[in-house]
Image (cartoon, rainbow, N blue to C red; front, side, top):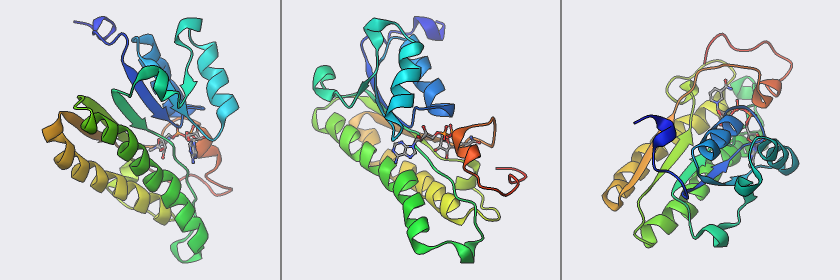
Length: 195
Ligand SMILES: NC(=O)c1ccc[n+]([C@@H]2O[C@H](COP(=O)([O-])OP(=O)(O)OC[C@H]3O[C@@H](n4cnc5c(N)ncnc54)[C@H](O)[C@@H]3O)[C@@H](O)[C@H]2O)c1
C-alpha cells in the first residue's frame, strides 16, 4: 500500500512550528494524506497563510480549534529556536528562553494532547523534533543542545509511560539542512560545520 492510500482520512494532527521549514512541509504532507491539521506558531499570519495557500478550502488548518475535532490522533512538536553563543557568554534569561521554546513547549503540548488521548483511551502518536545536537554536543550550541538532549530523554521516558496506552512516542534528529528561519537566526556568525 502506498502512503497516499493509507486510511488516514478524518484523523487530526496537532503540529507546532509550521510557519516554514520542516513544520510547514510536515503540515502540508499530513493535509495531503487527509488529516485535519490543527496548528500553532508564534508567527500566526505566516503559518496560516502558507498552509491555506497549499490546501483546499475543505482542509484549511485551524489554530487550536480542538472542540471541532474532538481531540487529536497525532502531536508533532516542531517549534524551535537557536542561539549560537559561547557557553560562558549565554545569559541565564536567554538559556531559559531556548529551553522554554524547544523543551518545555514540546513537553506541554505532549502533556495536553497525549494526556487527552490517554484519558479517552485513544490510540495515537507523538513526534518530537530533536536534532543531531540532541545526541552530540558542539561548539556554541549549549542551550540548543541541552534542549535537544532533553527532547531525546523526554521521548524515551514518555515512550515508556505511554506505549502501554497505545500511544507511540518518537523523535527525529535532523542534521543541518536548507535555509530555514532558524538558520537565519543563527546570528551573525558562520554556521557550524555539522549538526
Ligand atoms: N534546519 C535544520 O538544519 C534543523 C536541524 C536539526 C533540527 N532542527 C529542528 O527542526 C525544527 C524546525 O526547524 P526549521 O529548521 O524548520 O526552522 P524554522 O525556524 O523554519 O521553524 C521553527 C518554527 O517554530 C516557530 N516557533 C518559534 N518559537 C515558537 C513558539 N514559542 N511557539 C510556537 N512556534 C514557535 C517559528 O515561528 C517557526 O515557524 C526546530 O525544532 C529545529 O530545532 C532543524
